[in-house]
Length: 154
Figure: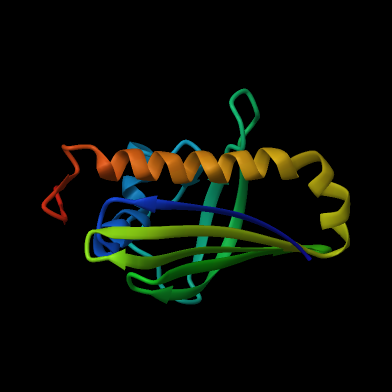
């Protein structure tokens, strides 16, 4: 199994970071890496979701379907994508550093015989996309128009 990981600290409480991650209809406001295609409010365990990833500028978008595995408000959102010979586990974890700061951790774990063939071609771009998403989330939530006194402004 190969695991990619990125972590960033965000000046916003976990409830605010969770709100932004959980409501995929807001992703287009801040996220250039991962998109929802059929937007339904929030995520539910065992829900099938259709997502699109754009690993780097100029690269085509890849659409895939995932099954939501875990929804733990303000703590973790996880899903699994799988096809014959390839499995990808995506986890977004939130940890309160203090009441106004959150550590955001995004991991992607790949397994299966196809992972060994695909990762040499997509691994670096996937890692860069994950890092870009973390930086965009931080920038979005720390902008004055989005967070005021730790509360999300709609």
